[in-house]
Image (cartoon, rainbow, N blue to C red; front, side, top):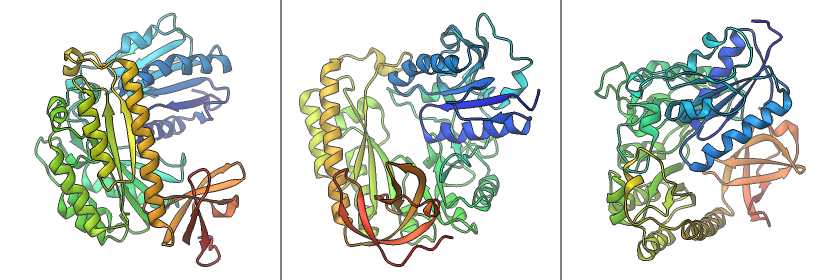
Length: 444
């Protein structure tokens, strides 16, 4: 394939998808392709799809249209979770040439013989049972921080979730390879690594192709903390039943791990947690939050919550709202329940009208604003370290402290990807924190 051929990527969904897109992009570059931004004219457009929400499904067609506007002759490839779950549906979208499932996406360059447009999208997908091997990934060069994939798939059977159908069984990267990838990232000058996966607390299961756990998540955390050159390590989403006291205690005294946890709750009602087939009840969640705050009073805790799940009455929703209102957390990620075929919840009774779902979502988003504001206010006057991002937004540069407080200061390109000591001073009208320098910036 000519070195002049250009390829662009668009990623929908989670941090895991971003890590895989970045790895696939490097594979293209190794084959002689030139990577360009998605907004530019390219010969090939690769769209990494998501199917967690109905909205992600709907966005796919508009992304395809936008790509074809830039180059009507471009070769369009769909990969990712939606491509595994509904390959024929994606292949039927006008302009899509190739659809690759869960096991094929990392071999995408093998499927490109020429770039002639197809009348109908060509599908190469597998039975999800065949997705039983692990492919390591990490993002680099896309953002200030890197997303390091350590685990894939899920063995849980939550009644609303299609991810096990899209990604297969729980399996893990070998510990040695995780450490090698982390070292490679640090050698590129990236200051922060975010651990990601489908169910990262289940790390170690399927590590060498075996179903048992070879290592625990806590052993992974302790091993990563010894890698030279890593300034920050951040745990992404981890199930409350898999976040142990040992891990919390270790993070509290760690060299690199930061005091920030994102812990899915999904509902503050034990009744709904049971219907969802979550592997914990509210008491477990209380214990996790209490354990974190006892060891790290300034820790940031984010929460995933679903509104409008079948059977969620006004009373059960208020139970969730009031529970979250009283809980010592920092922000919410609110998901409006959407029906997903081939899930147990799809056929459940007690369907919540979409207008009611929207109203409840708005209430919880408002609560999230309140919670984030209260958390930021609790941090004013504290001396913290900020890692600055790379975007110039309206003349300002933004960054995040180790406990995930967003700050801003007038744009200075020399601050990009640097760690600086600051004192938080005030919250501006946009809800972002301003600060004073503890010492003048050092560009390291």
